[in-house]
Length: 335
Image 1 (cartoon, rainbow, N blue to C red):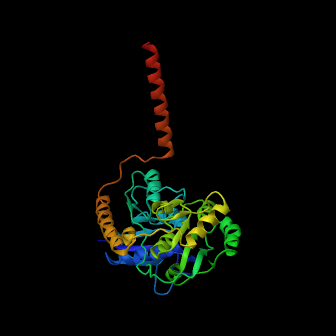
Image 2 (spheres, one colour):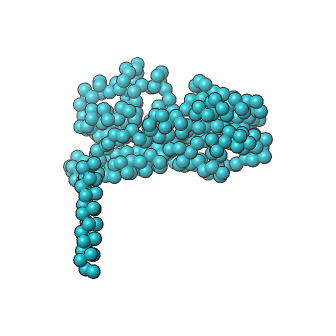
């Protein structure tokens, strides 16, 4: 099995975000399956391989470069064109195209559907993000009524809903990085996450949405938007509640009902099994087997399925219109 190089701009600092942590988690899981290492390409870091240095080495035909940083993908794909490349797709909607020679591993079915439409000739796989095992319901006393993280939160949440809730219950607002988020989720009765507005401004989708899943795993009741990858696993009325539902007053009414323990949803560990380490490792092993087989094939065979380019789409549309007109003409002559 080929060695994997996971490309990230840097491993911390200004690059720190949920997407980076998810990518590094995937690297750790990959290391249980094959040889894998992290490579930075924007910032040189002590003890970490730098991409430009790595590309000077010989015998890179039998390694796989895993790229994932959305806005950098077009440049990286061009730079790594002579090599074996896999795109680990988190968010969708970046509006770039990829050749069929680059397999795509998606973190959500929502993102998989996007690339299934955008790149119909590419190999596409589904590998959900991992929910770490320390996100468990510890059955602690929940002394926080409502927990909210300001990052990615909507203007409605920050300027209207939070001030209103603070007058009626105990609200904890997080506005910085938290080392042990699992502890906070175990102390909170309700966690609110509303990212639809944020991602609409970014012009791309919510890739997976780790925090609502982590909160659920800790036994927290979740009020969330269901945009993008969140729609993979959130099911309002059955495992969560939809936030920003019609009016602020209705949101408050529903949240306080849950806080008072007069409404709650209980999930079994079976619900989370798809996202735990054991299943992710098994899926990744199977996916890598197929991808390695594909790169063996690519050595000896060039792609020959027509791409769904704008020009080809225009041609297909023209053919369809002509075919309809011909059928209509023949039909009218037969009367």
